[in-house]
Length: 391
Ligand SMILES: C[S@@+](CC[C@H](N)C(=O)[O-])C[C@H]1O[C@@H](n2cnc3c(N)ncnc32)[C@H](O)[C@@H]1O
Image 1 (spheres, helix red, strand yellow):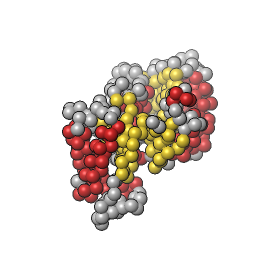
Image 2: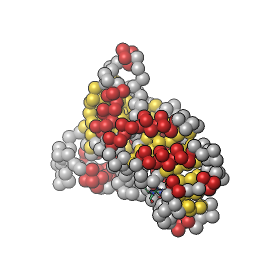
Image 3: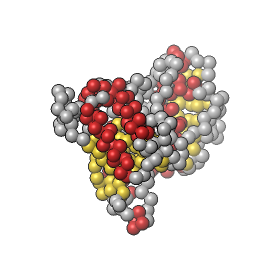
Image 4: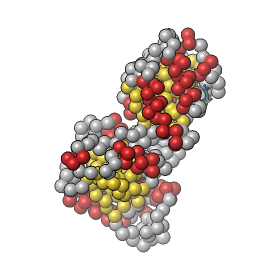
């Protein structure tokens, strides 16, 4: 039987993801694709004798696409919900998920759930260890709608997830104690249900091999924080550390170039690290008044090497061109006093063409002794990517 792969990515990055994957597996064939999700028909594994795991930095997550389910919309005044053959935009899709009458409890949604159960049974691959139900394209607020995630999921969506979970449990397709969208464990086989349109869904699965595959749809679940996060960078650094599995420990020192207004420093301080923020701009009072925070109000290149001699982790989030960031970091890490264990660099991409330089960037970083390099376009990244390197 033919095997299909699904890959998810930041909305708008689909054509790059397609090109990148086809250059990795030239005999793959593009199949279904929508904003935020791309699928490929894979060549026969035995024939090609290759690993089809995507190697690029743009995929958020991936797995096997098993089948598609689509139900006919019933007539109703809301386009895209009960009426629509018409395609709806991301905002309208999102609004629909807020509405239990038009989505979660709607007749079309009930039919979609029934059809999904039938399709999942037909695969004869159940019972799965876990269940991830997610929406393509980062449509939920926890991903990229608003700057800061809203932990309240849309009510129609919540209804849908509960009903889907119960229906799968009733058919023993997932264990009775399954909690949908919990982080999965390494090695677990997870059923993926990706809503691509209000009346259309991809049934897939993956076995967890990477940190990001533990998260539903490859999206790190947001956590409530006692104090409101200062900026998106709060979520960026949390995601980077968790994805890359960095062993940040209380009492260690993190230095961030480009630290204002202070979101990532705020998260690092919450982890009981000592933080040095280098930025000519002002830092938020929550951070600047913290006893473990030091502000060096300079540009990265003007900083005194002596001030960074205890640096365990060196971060950059400065809004500067990637080569300028790498020049600055190289100047620092080549100094005998500065020996961080790892680097977390946000590289800004005003133009995605810059990604052509990815390999030369990682080679350059590796030449400083940071040979374990990896990259990801984080869910909380916008026009940028994250490069992590450790010794
Ligand atoms: C995206 S913001 C950083 C957000 C920050 N990481 C946070 O957690 O809130 C980019 C910052 O880079 C700073 N920046 C630009 N050029 C810089 C340089 N040469 N050295 C240090 N900071 C710089 C800007 O002043 C700006 O505050």
